[in-house]
Length: 457
Image (cartoon, rainbow, N blue to C red; front, side, top):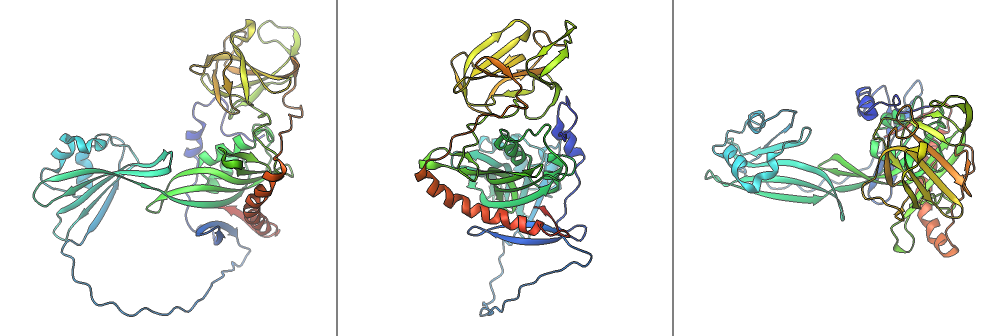
């Protein structure tokens, strides 16, 4: 079993980041190959060469344009400088590093309400300045929100302060839609899922999406094996050449223990969209294998010695050890049938699903704000937080999967099969799948050679 970090660690992401290796554009003799992807989009794959690297070059003759007449000298020729905000930085320190000594500028930034976004300096964000040939400020720019998720998509927001040359300044807020790209990546699991995605420069947000999309097919807590491989196509957003955010996964293939699991995003009839396998079966209609993103199983289904009362008795669920406050998510669409305290279960939620299926989530520290009996919840929606209420010796989630009110082992049961698209929807769906399948199979072809290892970028 490969997990991300040690169970119970308050921040497993911080632990992983501390052990990440720096990425370089060229390292260890790797050759980067560009893949054409859709209109105007491109992706990169990393190919591990054999003993003698092979480099492919393309040549094309281009006609040189006629020479332009010499342009006049711009007396306001710009010199650009940039600095990154550090923890504990002050506005004065930033201006000093940028070598900006414009009289009255700092006072304007501190006092003028139109420049209020610079009052809050976020470590890691950038401040840029442009000056003329004499060192006079032309503009100062604070990129305070490089990636804001709006209804229209990902946008970049910045404050720009212009100097009019007379000791006066004007501050205005700007925003611009981020540049959208489609990226394709592949990697192989050697130690953990997040280790593989780190090696492929895949953002954590995309990794988490992957576990959510295929959570009904793969138990990412205990099913992963060394040598498992995934290929993924996802949206990425950039501003001035820097990646500032990601969108959704468009297509995905995950090979776990030799079996391929596929997913593609599809929105039939202008609906909100969902994920389907390549045959058109919805992945959302099935049950997730676990209600916690990452944890460890502390007690399985079956006979055990009770940790509180002693003696051997049947354990009708699965216990997941996690720190108090870890979010708990619904494993399928359903309705809250019970929410409150229930004997040894402590704070408990029971969800009623389609047909005769119900799920139980016990020992919670607290419930999701505003959740009450009769509320509808969606698959993956937050319903509560891990705790140790009731008969519990430590913080954990007790999870039960029931059919006709009879507890069934959720780790071994065949989960309900999702519904498929109808015939008319399948026609347009197949066209959607075709454009992604080609590129996923292309990566698979690169990886097929025994002496060629394909990683992702």
